[in-house]
Amino acid sequence: MSFALPPYAELLGITIEHGDGPPILDMPFGSGVLGRPGFVHGGALSGLLEMAAVAALRHALAVEDRAGARIKPVNVTVDFMRGGREKVTRAQGKVSRLGNRVANVEAFAWQDDPDRPVAAARMNFLISASA
Image (cartoon, rainbow, N blue to C red; front, side, top):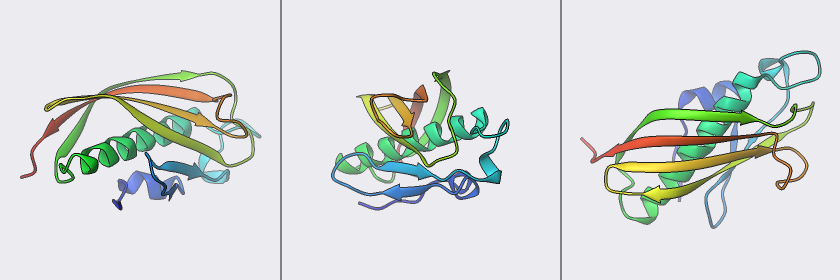
């Protein structure tokens, strides 16, 4: 199952790890995501979480044969739990509700251990049929 992420993902250097479930996204540490010295910028973490949510929703829609559906983010809430350090940050989304018109998605970002996230997000999306 393959799909393209929005152009913002390329700006952050995000790549996709494809597997059986929702994809895991990787964002390398570098000057483009640097916040204060030695730490990932909160905006870059938020962008990674949004891309992970989009990827998880695209995956879920493809499984339901609705791959051509258009999605529009309605809102996002991000919780920062600890500072992201100078290493690869990974993120994965999980669709908690997928209706005909609305989807609720959670996403978590981590570095060394998925059980110790550096940030988490909750997003709501509107879904419409393809044009």
